[in-house]
Amino acid sequence: MERYSQITRYVTETAVIFLFSAVLILQTVNIFFRYTGFLAPLMWVEEFSTFSFIWMFFLLWHVADRDGKHFMVDILHGKVPPRIRWGLEVFRHFAAIVFSGVVVWSSWAFISVAGGYPTNSFKWLLMGVVYLVIPLGLGLVLVERISMIWATLRRSNN
Image (tube, rainbow, N blue to C red; front, top):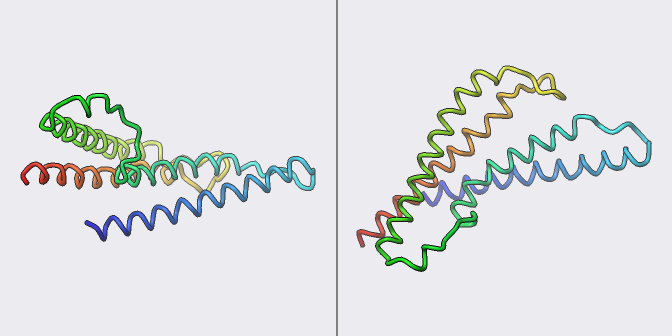
């Protein structure tokens, strides 16, 4: 599992660095074009930026889960006995597993229906490719949460 974590972190962080760099460069060029009048702004940059940020969000979700960086309300965490705290942790992982599974399953149905339409700016890019990040990202979250609940359950047996 450690090797899986290293590979997924490297691949997702590399993809996100590439996407973010591309957005930064393209938006800078577009701002330059807009205010200098040198060339007309590139109309597709806004849509590319939107799709890139969606991809970044979904690709990094599992890394944030793994590192415990997601926002959570932990008002009960310090006020309940350890056994109940453990139960809340198991429930939290279980709920995330169910949520991820439902979204992965339903996103495939959505992609099969809406995925054949082209995007507004890129006639060669189908919306199915853009939406593909949903099952991909939440599939990674699903694997991560299964690993986390497994570790939590093993910890209770020790």
